[in-house]
Length: 122
Length: 326
Ligand SMILES: Cc1cc2nc3c(=O)[nH]c(=O)nc-3n(C[C@H](O)[C@H](O)[C@H](O)COP(=O)(O)OP(=O)(O)OC[C@H]3O[C@@H](n4cnc5c(N)ncnc54)[C@H](O)[C@@H]3O)c2cc1C
Ligand code: SF4
Figure 1 (tube, each protein chain N blue to C red):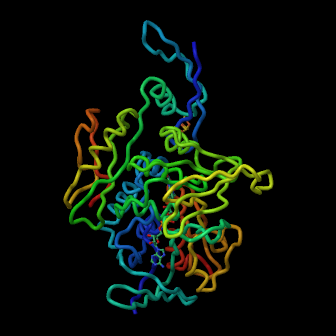
Figure 2 (tube, chains in turn red, blue):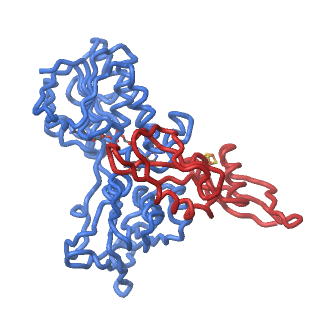
């Protein structure tokens, strides 16, 4: 069994969480999680060991908007490993106003199954 | 002269939350004055997630938090003047502002100051060297990249490890720049742990503690920075100097409340918070003038800004109704 320390990034508390894990039948298994102040931390710590994910935020070019850029985010956290691939698609994307908060800007970004959506009206 | 019950200076999260609460607690004639083209304040450039967990019980980005507040304004009858810069506030509660139509004067029964904060600039730090281009405060760079769509440079050094600097380290990296490192004079970062993990560690950006910049090089454009380690008295240690090549330097060195207007009005200031001295329930030394948000003191979390601004909105409307004695 191994123990990893994970700092929870879900909220500003930044709890230091210990995760006991080991490989069983060629699969990484989480055995025990301590140090989290809430349930969200438990979920985060588990995913951090098995498949780390992050909410990606960036901007896309927008024509006819108030400003040249529209802020966008991944509707859900995406695997860390797909972040740079997702950025390539985001950098190429152009939209035209009007756009509303929550509108899908890129669907299934970098093959993750997760959409990139608008953070505000533009 | 425009007459209103409550005038709010600044349409960021503090001003918006205060305005909505004024309306909810019975005031009808409310006016928000905002110098920018849009409402939302600093949140418009804070495109990262990490807002609203306690106020909206949901993790939002800055623009999403602002958009929710803007949506809440609809149908309230609260008047908004954007592109309107407030020039002065008097003890008699007369506001002078410059709008697209020229100068306007507003007589208010109560005023809420919600101008936010500004960044400390390089002049307030002591770094020697020339004054080439390529030096930005982290917040200015944030606005350039996230709102204007302009990349300040390709090889970046970040001085100071405040949250805005950490967030910009990640942002510039995602946009294809290379961040050499974050240099912090103190033995510990004053940024949130979550930002060190997800903004630096995730991208392999080094954080150098006990290290400061002693010189910025370059004639027209920055070509590099000399950094050195410091001793316990924060003095550079001879022999530890290192030249770091870069074309851009971001300064992430803290915020101070924006209070030119308060000073001009003769409001008593608190030397500790650098905001107006609090005479209880966010009242300033001038009866009927209140302060909230980062103009009152610098907050870490927008959720707390909004929660406190609600209290301010309520007190201001009580004042207008004469329920709060002078
Ligand atoms: C870069 C950065 C990152 C942050 N990250 C987080 C985070 O991850 N999570 C979190 O919870 N909080 C975060 N915060 C804190 C939070 O965003 C702020 O505390 C909050 O936005 C402050 O709100 P405010 O309304 O007081 O000020 P602001 O949002 O600054 O609004 C002030 C408004 O007043 C206007 N104004 C100023 N002077 C005048 C004038 N003379 N006339 C007319 N209008 C005027 C300005 O244009 C602006 O719109 C961050 C802050 C910054 C700066
Ligand atoms: S464990 Fe819960 S309280 Fe601790 S940082 Fe994570 S989300 Fe916040």
